[in-house]
Length: 113
Image (tube, rainbow, N blue to C red; front, side, top):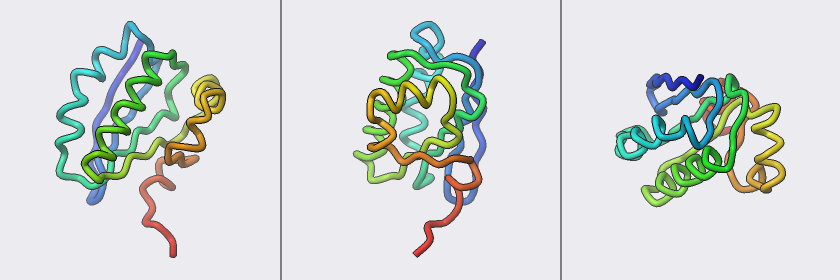
């Protein structure tokens, strides 16, 4: 099972993913990508703390969203990456490219100077 929940804060749109993000389930998130990119919020935080597993289609979708947000000069962060999804991101060296935060709270915190 795969679930998507949206929340808004003052500075970010938060999308919480739970379950398994695979080639079978990613279509439901793909349908929302265009509206996610068009948000007036300057940042998208994808909370994957409840994501159990991800495959190459799911990774490709998240990277695609990242690219679209960067083209619009908006921030894209992934919060709560752990377990199998983290192992996949690490194997692909995406943990060095994407802005990862251990928790949603840290992803939403203002930058420290």
